[in-house]
Length: 99
Image (cartoon, rainbow, N blue to C red; front, side, top):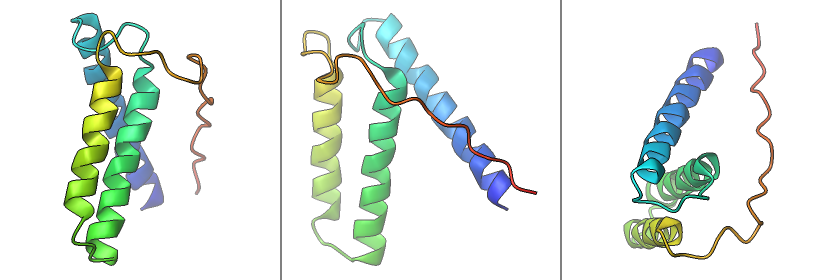
């Protein structure tokens, strides 16, 4: 089960990273945008919303997720300041396969 879920997550993240890369190539997002980091942050918004809405039953979850998404997208638009990390990002460890 874990291998299936990890594979699905890899495929989903890969697809989103490709879409972000296409948006960069088309000039919709800034050239120096780290697509993998953008997708990682987008995933964080999704997971935070899921926990807040489903587990915590937070009535503000939708509004907070929407606001976080808007900030994420706005920071990726052309003309915005580069990543405060200077374009450096953590390397992604490979997800271990378990028998």
